[in-house]
Structures are given as structure tokens and as C-alpha cells.
Length: 90
Image (cartoon, rainbow, N blue to C red; front, side, top):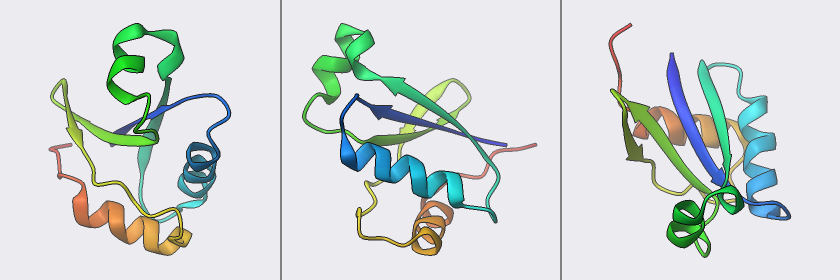
């Protein structure tokens, strides 16, 4: 299963919109881990002006996924993810 990490922060409407759309994707199996950047200084320093940041965890390494436009529909977001996700062995 694909493991996605979303770096987010409270009150971020772009983050909330992305989470809502990710939760509606039905034709792509993934586990979503949401990390609140305000809970760790290193995350806050790295992403405070960049959220939402979406990454894929592969063999213990975080691989960035290009930022999807907030205007994408749920199906367009699914296509975006399918295009950028790296296949991992089962």
C-alpha cells in the first residue's frame, strides 16, 4: 500500500481542502499520515510557508510529490497522484 505524508498546519484551508479530496479518492489505495508542522520545530522551519506538502514514503525515505493545484477535482487529483507515485513492491 502507498504511504502518503501530508505536512499541514491548523487553519490551513488549502490543507483541509486537499485532505477532503484525498479522502474522496476511491480508485487508489493509500494510507494518509497527516503531520502538523506546528508540533516539531524542524517541520515548522522547513514547511511553514509551503503547506500543504505531500510526500510518499518509500523504504524509509520521503519522496516529494509535486504540489497539486487546489482547483483539481477529486478525479484529477487521483490522476495527478497516479502519475507521480512511485510503485513499490507489495
